Length: 68
Image 1: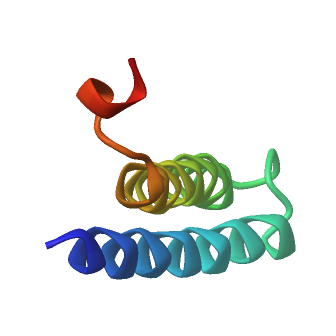
Image 2 (image 1 turned 180 degrees about the vertical axis):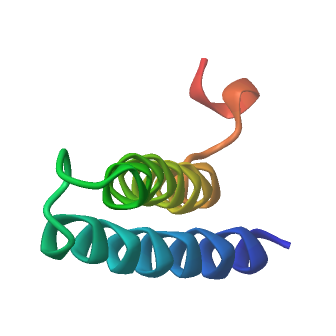
């Protein structure tokens, strides 16, 4: 199940980065569509990084009971 979150997070990051690049190339601020692409790309890329990062961190951490 953890691998699914890593894959989903990586896909979200890749799609978000693509939207981000499209927003930058579309001269954000000049057209509303490019601005929306820029904002959505940043949000999707950050969501993907967080999802994949926490999934990897959760799988690598030892249980709380054994840490005490």
